[in-house]
Image 1: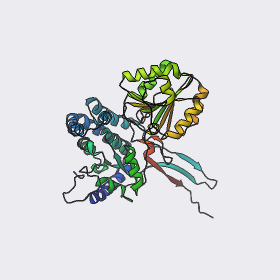
Image 2: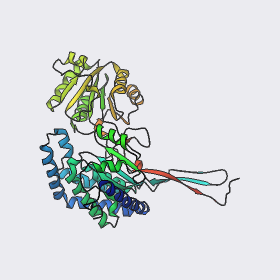
Image 3: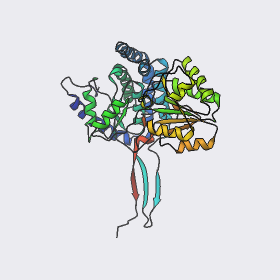
Image 4: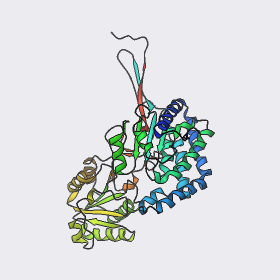
Length: 426
């Protein structure tokens, strides 16, 4: 296989060679008709289904090593694969194949007074480097989205998911072969050595865009060391604000889902903001609901005055992405106070308001610059699949190029076609 490293090759040399192969593959992909790219995705999905037992066995090796490392339950959940999650990976590739071709669009079209017709059309980014942690299914999602958008991708998963990532990659590669698409369109390093991350970050002129998906330390390292453009996200410090005009039943259901559906995902609510007008009646109920689901708390003084046995929040707790069954709680005086709290402590990832008051909801949504803001819905809907993107390659919180779930459209740039009839410039 062309992604196998010779025993004497250094990580830097492997990356140089892999990027060259990826560049050649991306040129082929950019010229392939949509049907050929879709065929590769469907074949890859079929190979994942056929290799499900092998993938699960590889994941069991990763889980066994993780269990001896003393990692958290939430992070173990991120790492774990089961038949349903493996089937979902394959289904995700089929869904990406069924999406409209992101390259078969005209973004803009206009004619100048001199008769020149100018078209702005999509263009693949080229070679993408994806660095991610824990969740092995990210590799399949990223491969599928990059392929559909005409890009080659070099994937570097976390060391704790090394065997899972290799098994998934082998399935994807089998699908590429079956569809006669260059195998170098999707590559992974042959070892878990962190030097491969450094090699990716230094691959200026070889990789066109780096996308980190993981914890704060990973993202900060990539941003600090990369010599390649970075499409990054901050930590998912997400808030749910329950306004005085919230429907009580709706608020209970939304908060339980937003916090406890999956605590280790970046769209999980980490802080509850509850309006002082309803906190005395509603907060004890919310605490009881979440405690029954295994949640712990860190609460401010106003919340503890209502529910006395809540643990006190430290100065740092409202700046913490728990990624676990822990919820920070603060009582606030109305929507302006809620917005102020989020602006001080948030990461511009995802926020939600629960209220029946449209004017308040509008103020909340327009008063924040977070990548995703929801009204009367769980923060866990911040997900490319839930947005109709088929899957996602990450959640971007920066201000350049793209924000929120990164799907097919965000994995393209654009160029111009200019159609003339003999014009010359005076």
